[in-house]
Length: 368
Length: 266
Image 1: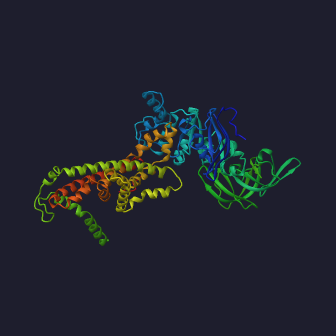
Image 2: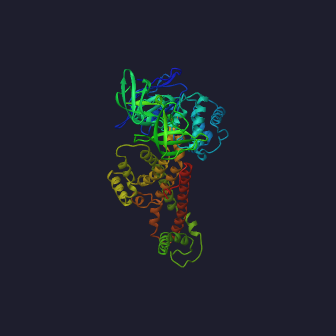
Image 3: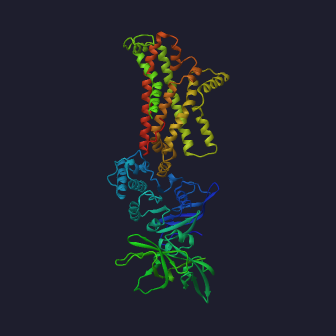
């Protein structure tokens, strides 16, 4: 079944049943996917899941065993990378070290019918777009990591491709620079309106930047949704575990006259809805998942708005704005992580303290 | 520690002292190569201008060295690309075979080439020396170019291709400029090796001797010995100059590719 582009977007890329082997290794196992025009799309997964292979397939660098790649209504089979309307930003940036910044940016314009002055103007405009105006005459090998990244972006965007492919573009930058570039990339994408396809193993980066994310495991797309849906309603336990932090507790499920009842070890019984069971309601043994921010420590005066369970604080991790607590519910061996905002006047609790924990039955996700 | 230092100094003296004797006697007035020195003169250098056989030998050597260097470097580019850019069955074995002349005694190469050429009923000449020299220079060229190609990020070539260049124009616009220092360095080292190679040239040179072969034949005439010394001096200076230029190019290449200098070939 093909994962369709969102109805409000015209589909630009259509991948049909893509299969790829490297010798014995099955790298892509039947990818069916549509990506819309002007979408910021991410391929997210652990290393070796096939995300980079899929990106390189769209770029035209990989020969696939079977399947089809359609781009703007044209079949791309047999069209080499240098003839496709896609451009790539490489993980190593691949800035030509023997050329100046301007020569790098104008590299792909050689065969364009523009005059020399127009090409220089286009290159300068592209540099301006990535915040590097006036850097044209600098030697490319003297640039910093963040600057190389921008030159690589300008070099690809100056050709006005239909799709910009980004292969882990931020992984070589330090944390601060990475967060800054994430925001800049979102702005840039909105400004140029070109479809961006980003490959990343960083789930946070994917959540921050994307309109839609495809989570890949072992050459298959496990789930493709927008960030919020992906975070709140992961379809499988594996996706739930990969995106953000997810706590799991064992439980048993039973159907009681049309009511779906789940009995969670340490938390007790509650009724759940159909939507909370992405794999279908499992009768008998099950696992419930819940995010750290859906749990709250109740301070003395507070009364619970949802359900309440006693627990012992096992570990405290202080982050400044947030504190993460690992707590053990009474009668449960596995610790559960919860996060609290450090509001003014609220003390950080110590290890070994007893606490009342509030939890929301509506935030649970139940897996078979 | 002290013994090691003494050893190192003695070792260097043993290696290089004979070379320093060359210019010493080249500027000495006596035709007999012995101490004490009798006086300073440059007449041996001017005498070089009159020995036409030597000019022919020099020109012959130059011709052979340039041709072998160009051929060895072209083969070296193919070999280095094959070993760094592609993977195919038997790759290691094939590369090993190509690098073999590096350790094979030259006399074996020379004799076997001579046997093959004579058995084929052909006569030796400059072309057979070129063939032999290309054979022994190619491994050196590959060794230098291998590191030049290995230092080149493959995504640079992919990026150029992605930006609309063909395979050929990618090679011209990106690959070639970036490995150019390696190519220059391979050319110069191959040229130097061919220029002063003796054994292969001695066996295969035929009627037109190369310079080393000619010099060897002149050793029988003591009167010409100081002139040989003078020529030797010129050759030593030229060799050092060439090797230095080759190394400067290699380092510049490493720097341009943004690499740390790891010592390299020399």
